[in-house]
Image (tube, rainbow, N blue to C red; front, top):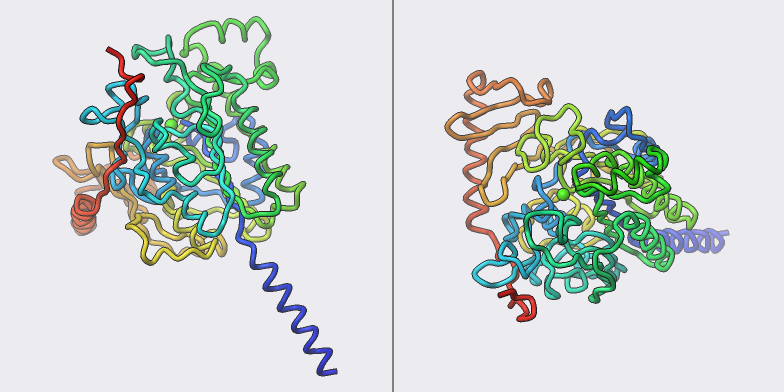
Length: 459
Ligand SMILES: [Ca+2]
C-alpha cells in the first residue's frame, strides 16, 4: 500500500509540475483613440459591443485604468517598456523619418534598441511574439518590431492618417509592412481590421502548443475611420456609405460607431479562437485603448485625446483569464498600462531585480485575487511639457500657480476645485511630485538615433 501511495504521489507531483510548467499566453488588444465612453459595458447606449461586454462579464473591468500619455507614440512606448514615455526618450508623437518632425538634430529617432521591450522580456522564457497593427515607435529598421523582440510583424508603421492628400503635411505613400518588407502602399483601410484579425488568428493557431505574446494594435478607430462593408452596411445604405467614404476624413467620422463595432467583432473572433483551441484557461487577454477619444466619447470624463484631464488618459480596460480572474469583477484601483510589464514578468516568472528602472507596479495580486492592496501614484505627463498632475487614491492634483485638487470619487468630471479645503493633502502631493520630477530628470534614458537613408531625404 505504501508503494501505491508513493506512486500516486509521484504521479500527482508530475502532473502538477507539468501543468504549471507552461507560462501563460498574453494577448493585448490595443485600439487607437477609443474613448472611455465608447464601449457598452462602460455605459454606451448606441454602439453595440457584445463581445467586449462578454469579456467584462467573464473577466475584470477596470474603472480607473490609465495609459501613460494622451497621444499615440508615447502611450505605446510606455506599454512596451513599463516606463513613463519621458523616461525612455519618447515623449511625443513621431512622424515618418523623412519628415522634419521625425528628426532630431538631423537624425531619425525611435524606441532605443537598448530598451528591453515586453516582447524581448518574454523572449527570456522562449515566448513566440507577434506585433500586428500599428507600431509608431520609429519607422527605420533599427526601431521596428523585428528589432524589438517580435518574431513577426504585419501592419502600418505609424498612424493611418500619415498618407498623402489628407493633412497639410506632405506624407509619402503609407506602407503596409510584413516583417521588414513593404508589401503594399496605401492599402485599402476598409479591410485593415479584418486582415489584422486573420493574422492574429493564424498566429494563435500556429503557436497553440507554445507560450505566446500577441500584441494586436489596431489602427482603428483613429481618424480617418474605415470599416469593412459587412459592418458598415448594418448602419448605412449603399448610397449613404458611398457619400461618407467619398468625402474627407471629417465625413468619415460617421463611421466611428461602425468602426468600434468591427473592433468588437474582432475581439469576438480572437476569443472564440482561444476557446476553440482550449487556450482560454492559459491566456490572459487584455482589451484597452492607447489614449482618449478624438471623435468618440469619454463618457462622464472631462477632456479628450491630448488632454491631461481624465478623458485624455483614462481608458476602457478589461482583462479576461478563464479560471484565474473572477467573472464579472470590477477593479476600482488606480492601474496603468505601465503596470502590464512587471505584471507579465511576474506571471511568466521573470525576475526584474537587475532590470533598468521601470515605473510600473506588479498588479497580479489585483488581477488574480481582486485584493484592494494597491495605493499607487500615477503621474499625468504632457508630452515634453512636464508633469502636470498626480493621482493618489481618490485625489487628483494639478500643482502650479493656480493649483487644483479634485476628489475623483465624488467628482469624476473634475469640476470642483477643493485645493483650499485640504492644505495638508496638497502639501504632501506637492512633495511627491517634486521628488518624482527629480527622479525622472536624473534617471531618464535616450531614444535611439539612426542616420536617415539618403533616398529618404527630400531636397
Ligand atoms: Ca492614439
